Amino acid sequence: MTDTLDPEDQKIITLARSARARNGSPEGAAVRDETGRTYAASGVDLPSLQLTAIQVAVAMAVSSGAKAVEAAALVTEADDPAAQDVAAIEDLGNGTLFVAGPDGMLKGRYI
Image (tube, rainbow, N blue to C red; front, side, top):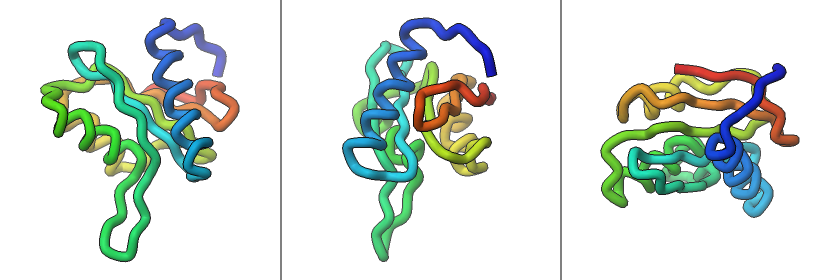
């Protein structure tokens, strides 16, 4: 997909890539809240708790007082986001969800 991104949107893709690489995770995510604060995370896969990277990043934002997500980025091998990732973003408004490959190339925009 050929697309020119706003520098702030490119930033959250970079943060998501960094979270993925830092933890050796299959997915990394980052969200930007309504005030411009960013939160980056990878997924959690414990016997008692499974959360996607988007769910962790949204939970971090909410627990820090965010009321809305302006934009989110998911870096993954998958072509499309999981339904629960889209739902987590929709819970906090009409933010855009960017999906990018591990190389940072944009695959699509959702929501």
